Every structure is written in structure tokens, then in C-alpha cells.
Length: 275
Length: 275
Ligand SMILES: Nc1ncnc2c1ncn2[C@@H]1O[C@H](COP(=O)(O)OP(=O)(O)OP(=O)(O)O)[C@@H](O)[C@H]1O
Ligand SMILES: [Mg+2]
Image 1 (cartoon, each protein chain N blue to C red):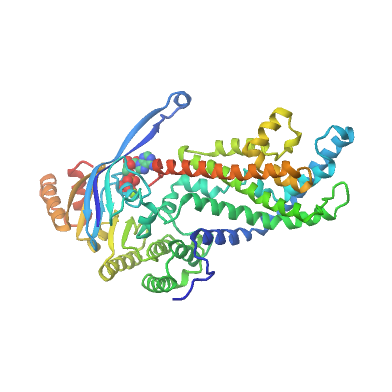
Image 2 (spheres, each protein chain N blue to C red):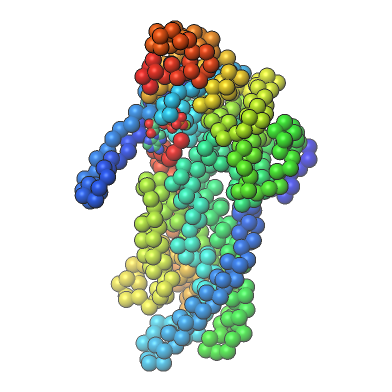
């Protein structure tokens, strides 16, 4: 028997691979993404500099830490932001195209998880390098300062993938909710904006008022971009960092479990639209 | 062996009449309407049989097929297909079946047809040798060789439908469900698809259940016909018994004009049952 091309025969990996390579073809979109994110990051930093100049001591993060937070956030945007949805999932549910996905010997939860992760990773892979290179070479105070300790970089990567896992498993809940609404646009937008705000997508969580900050840091939103970005910039270290990583693992498993339960219930009641 | 016993399915749809006032009121109080898509549907199909499942628009044909594919869960009744209940053992069940939903596409829009086929091979974990054999045989029978490298989006409807049929057969299914497989095909393609289905049934003993509005499909393919109307099974018998029955009634209704061609006697049947 001839082994299949690629060797790996898991259907989820096959789907991941084809999605990933397909998304890599969108070079024009990646270029546009790079330009937007660079401009966006630059303006963000300008605004922060203005604040820091007015009163440098009243801020919970130093300027270089904030600058590092912003550049990495922009570079790995597709890993961190809820609104980076896989719209093909919503349209499959809403048009009834989902009938074919259910007629395949695949677990729908794992299938969606793998295809949406592939999209995010491919988009990130294309955008992060040029942005990081530019951020490292531009002059201070805009320059991205790299951490010197290897462990910190390692922990950053671990935390980044945990963050992406938490983000994807939260977006899974939004995908699943599409089964019970005729049009999920409202949910998509509200959840996207609220979650990305709470996750520190617009303002880092340390800048939040104390009560809100405390609550958010314990919630799944605190287990998203907040963790890797603060680890990278050196704002989070030692015991607090370890606790944060543990919380990320906890939320990842909790959301996976919740998602699986909700998916099971949704599939029992699923209504496939159209003939 | 396929056995359905008293399968029923009700869809609950939100009622909203036209007009702004009504739309506004619908925001506060929701009225629902129950559509009984299937009522006590029972029938059995033996291995290797080829059955035509006919009925007017909205009769419940597609709903029945979705239930047999494990895509929908019925409200009541039992269904046993080769020892499994489709919606309970969905993943194991769908491994052994093939399905074509004529009004949808299982091909990936942006990539060459052959890539979709390979993804399907990986999803079903079909051994390469079997995949290759089926692919060669199918492309030959349905004359697809030239279009395998074309993205699905640029295929004509008929070309795409032929690819859909191939896609549902690559993994050697024991049972094939075809929901309007000849929709939109030209005469040549229709004949090719029919001949092919016939050969599949004769040579491999594949059980085939197909719905269609094209009575020539039925005449060319099936010995046995199940007639459904308004969610209920009305007749189950050979082509000949149905034809005779229709003729008797047609002659009573239309001053002795005996319906001869299939279209006419089926229309007479629909009329008789007021469906
Ligand atoms: N998702 C749904 N929501 C609400 N009602 C539905 C849904 N799907 C089907 N129905 C209803 O169930 C009934 C049966 O539909 P079904 O699609 O099974 O008919 P069909 O026999 O396949 O018709 P056609 O020949 O037009 O394809 C129809 O009255 C239809 O309106
Ligand atoms: Mg139908």
C-alpha cells in the first residue's frame, strides 16, 4: 500500500494543513495588515508618549514596557483578538452548508478548532516578522526592546499559545451560539468588542481601575493577550507570572469543557437551514 | 439494512407577518408555528436495493435524508442503519455512508477539485490504493479528467454536480443517499450520472436511496418507489403498481385520458392525495 502524501493521516491535521497553506496565499491581505498594524501601533505609542510626558510616575507600566506591549500585540494580532473570527463557520451554519460537515466522520468541535487555529496561525506567521523587524530597528522611544533572558522568551511563547487557546475556545462559544440565532452578527460584534476590551486589546489591563482590574485578571479575559505581552515586556515576573500561567491553563481547560458540552447540546437541537 | 419506525420531526418557526407594526410587536412577543415536516415515517430498505423517494416540494424528503445521515435528530421514532442510530452514533455511522445534497456543495470553492478530493480522502482515512482506484474509475466514468485541476468556483453546475457525486463515493460507502443528484444537469450528464449509479448498485451492491423531481431518473433507476406527501408515507411499491394506481385514478378524474408518461402519472398521484 502506498502511504499518503504528507504521511500524517489525522483528518484534523489534514484540514489544518490545507487551511494554513491556503491562508498563506493571501499575501496582499497580509501586506495591508502589516501596514495598518504598523500605523496603528505607531499612533498608539504616540498617544501614550503624550500621556507619559504629562505625568510619568502615575502609570502602572513604564513607557518601554508599554511600547513592547503594543508592538507585540500588533505583530500577533491574529492570535489574540476575538474579532478575528472564521466567518466561513458562521456562513456554514446560517446557510445550512453545515449539513455536509455533519455528514463527515469528524468531531465538529475539533474540526472548527483546528480550522480556526490554522487561519489565525497563518495570518500571524505572515504579519509578525516584518512588523517585528521594523519595530526593532526604529529609533527610541518607538523601538521594541527585546528581553535578554532566554527563559522569558520561552515563557512568552508558552503563554502566547495558551492565550491563543483561550481565545479560540472562547470564540468557539460564539460559533456554537450561531446555531440558536437566525443571524449571529449582533452576538459577534458585541462579544468581539467587549471581550477584546476586557482582554486589554485597547488598553492594557494594568491601566484599568482597581476593582475592574482585579476581576478581569481572574477572568478568562485576563488569561489572553494580557499574559504573554506582560511577560515579554518584563512587567510580569516571578510568582505572579507563574500564577498567571496556571490561570491560563485553568481557563483553557474550563472553556474547552464548556464548549464541548454546549456543542453537544446544540447538535441535538440543530436545525439545518434550507433544502 | 435501513429501518425507520415512526420517525417524526417538527420545525418550530417564528411567525412574523409583514409590516413595521407587526415587526415591532414581534420584538416583544414571539409567535411560533410548528411545521410537521415528518409524521410517523416508517419504511425499510434492504442491502443492495435502489429506492426512489419522491413527493412534491416540501414533502419531507430532504428532512428524512438528513435524519438518516445523522445530521438532524428527530423528535420521535427509531432509525436503525446497519445496527446504528445515525444521530447517536453519527461519526461511526457516516463513515459508511455517502451523501449528495444536490442543492449544496461539498467542494471547497477556492481550490482545485482534486484538492477537495484529497481532503475528503484524509477525512475518511481512505487507504491511498483504494482512493486511487476509485478516483480513476470515477473520473473515467463521469469524464472529469480535464476539470480536476479547476477550482470548484469556475465549474459549470453540471460539471460541479458530477464532481459532487464523485466526492461522495471516494471512500467506498455501503449506502448512498442522493438528494436531487441530477438537478441542473444536461441530458448527457444526466445519462452519465444515471448509468454510473446503476453500475455502482449492480457491481458493488451499494444501497441507493435517491430523491428527485425528474421522473426519468426514477424510470431509469429504481424498481421500488416510496411516495411521501405532507410528511407522511403514502405509497410504497414497485414502479408498476404506482403507475397502475395513478392511471386508474387519472382516468376517473380526467375523462378517460390515461396518463402515460411518468410526469403525468406522478402529477395524478399528487392530485389524488391532495399533496
Ligand atoms: N430548517 C428548517 N426550518 C423550518 N422548517 C423547515 C426547515 N427545513 C425544512 N423545513 C420544513 O419542513 C418541510 C419539509 O422540508 P423538506 O426540505 O424535507 O422538503 P423536500 O421534500 O425535500 O422538498 P423539496 O422537494 O422542495 O426539496 C417543509 O415544509 C419545510 O418548510
Ligand atoms: Mg429537498
